Amino acid sequence: MDGDAIAQTVLDRFDRIGYRPAHPPGSKRRDWTCVAGIVAEVAGQPLTCVAIGTGLKCLNRDSASCETVNDSHAEVLCRRAFRRFLLEQVDLLASGKPAKWCQILEPVSSEQADEPKRFRIRSDVRLHMYISQAPCGDGSLESLADHVREQGSVDAVSEANRTEHKRALIHAAAAEGGSAGLVRGRNGFDMVGVLRTKPGRNDAVPTCSHSCSDKLAQWQCVGLQGALLSILIPDPIVLASVVVGDLFNPTALERALVHRVADHIVQVPAIVSTRVAFAYSQQWLQSTESVPVVSAPHSVAWWLGSDKGAENTVNGRKQGAAPGKDGTFAAKTRSELSMPVWFARWLEVAAKARHDTSTWSRYSDAKLAAVQYQAAKAHLRRESPVFVHWGGNRASLDDFSITQ
Image 1 (cartoon, rainbow, N blue to C red):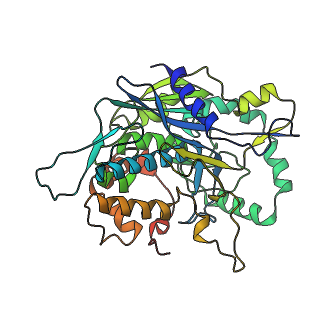
Image 2 (image 1 turned 90 degrees about the vertical axis):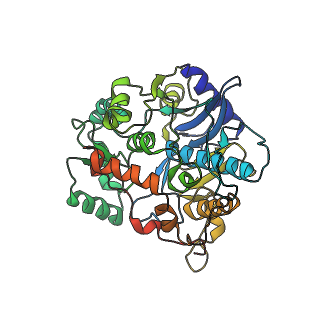
Image 3 (image 1 turned 135 degrees about the horizontal axis):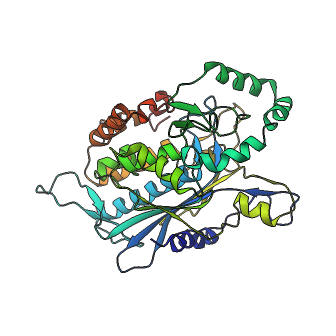
């Protein structure tokens, strides 16, 4: 597998979506980010990037809501964008219209003409994910360990600068402790192979979101499409390869993405490195700039076929979103990748595909209707000695209707 070609395909598309750093060249500081992209390899055709995500941020457990994109790490946004790409392809197929771009799905034939329509990935298609830096969590543990040990005094300095509210949240989380199977961020570098939550930094407020290493491993077992889309595309959609730029460590990546789920994985992805540099990576900017390099405050998502172009988000909402006089946010501030917007669009497409959506007024009900997908996820979290410790966000985040 040519990792450089896959990486270059993503970065070429990235250059065309109009990424705007918060601190452009010439500023007193520069901001770095991570980018992830999914590339479709179709027999006889050039490689095509179909989805991109950038980002480093994640909302803490007190800020997370059903209206916001709570995990805005690059890999997670890329996967959400990829689901939108798939949903738009289903929409075209269900409507009997030809695809305007890279067709990777095909209808599944049924004996009854009035049966709900279902779809699958074409047999001549392979999917690859490029990530500019090793995924957070178990897959980058060894690469980060030495650096973090060298920064041992950072937590003490940060503590002095925190607000009382943030300090209280962090101390409360520390008092809760953890388990041997679920570890906070970068705590316990000697504990390899375990599940970890975001963020990595100890001086940040905790979240309930799992690391990207954990999520990537789970997606290879249950499918990238998630619960709702599995009703329309039942067979798990998985990656043929994962291409990684900075902090590449094949031992850690194979352990994190393959060995931990060896008895449950649908397809073992090739773990591939690339020498192609990403111009906004932390390592590249630190080696080429003389000004401080800070993490980017915003995230970007794009998918092939979107009629709105790339979307910029901050704190899980569209960039520029502000609350009204009553302190609440209007529906127009929701990201196209947020659960309410995703659910509304999915209901439209599912109805076109002749699925009865009348009983799925709530998002949680529709997810539970994905029986095959939920069974696979439950089996992984019940039988895997690692994933049995899965935590995750509050179930109440899924309990909403699109009228809310």
